Length: 77
Image (cartoon, rainbow, N blue to C red; front, side):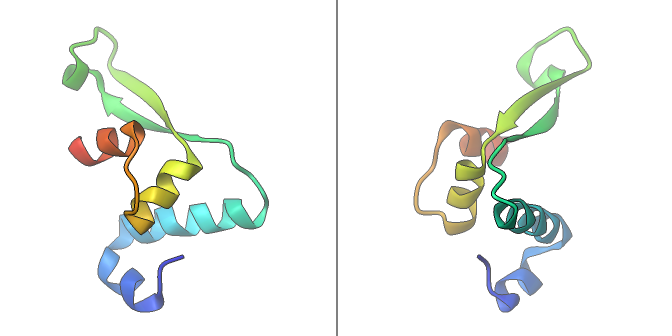
């Protein structure tokens, strides 16, 4: 989805996320993955919290055409 030039500028985390997304799409997988977040950000008792990030949200993140709540959570952490 991202061009080679865009991937060169994106950084290793974005490149890894892009590779995971493209691989999952090639295999027709659409199940979400879970982002682990320190619970103190949400004033919760457990050490970490997990929230699902759907593939449609990752598509929006890469294309930046539309923002859903999952993307807003990712961007504001």
